[in-house]
Length: 415
Image (cartoon, rainbow, N blue to C red; front, side, top):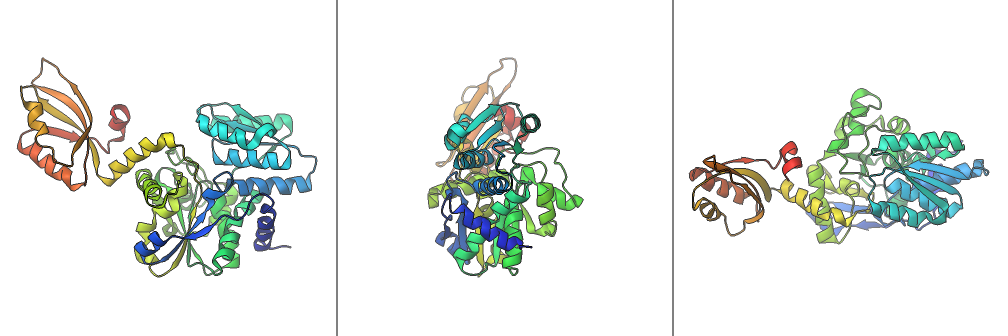
């Protein structure tokens, strides 16, 4: 019986009919910063700007080899998996029906249609992904089509393992550490299955978004567990339940190997890569590099490969990313100020602002029956310590306030 490593190498060779290997690039900036040899495996540079094409192509190729009469594939996805399936359908000349939530941004719908061309049909249904998935699976049963899972499929896992095959060949030696993002677990299970066989000395760190820690939950419960709530900001990795096959492939992992990345901190990382490196990463694509500060002491002098898993970022989200990054970095805050209703009170407050302070939001509701009015204020500044000076001045002058920057409920309604 052929080993997983050999099967992964065969799958990698087959992929060359579709696209060349993605670059493995040494990053001088990160290497100098962390006194390590840090490389980026640029999965954001595949034809569909994510690794998902690998699994979709491999699963489709292997099924068609076993069942040449199978000509109809179905998937449910709002993003990268849909684009990978669409691209593969056009390559093989088979029909694809892609179910997407009604709430999917038009940009993602258009890109999926571009990749699939006349080979695919897009069906928009359901406000939430679970509804979309149910509709896709019901459609499969009616049409005798093949449902292509985004991660919980042996052939999809094999296809994603090609990332590990390429990075090992490109580096020419086993890395000390590979940092992998985790959503449903397809990429992580594929790469680790290959490297544990081909480079057993390599260690692994897994990264999940804080609001979608499905591997963490599975390791805690010794099996896949459904998260009660998922933060959808890191849409490429916001999965409520890790796949059964994926957990089976990752169950050896220790909880200390799984790190959580706060969504707002990921925004900081995305902006740094855009501004410093000129690299566009989607939130899930930034996970592996986002945790480098947490690993600074342990990676010094080591060879580290970070897999940047995707770059499908809608620039209409850039203001939100900047906003979240500023709030996490402490250079932007929102607070509710109780403003005395007397002449000159506003001017007095304005004199408290420093040279780096800028008012980004100001909403004042004057109520004549009261001695104080509530003001919603957003302030951007040059460095976090400026807020300590501002708040000290406000307290000394008797201005009471409430910092609501981290209050999710108030922020959702007011900001």
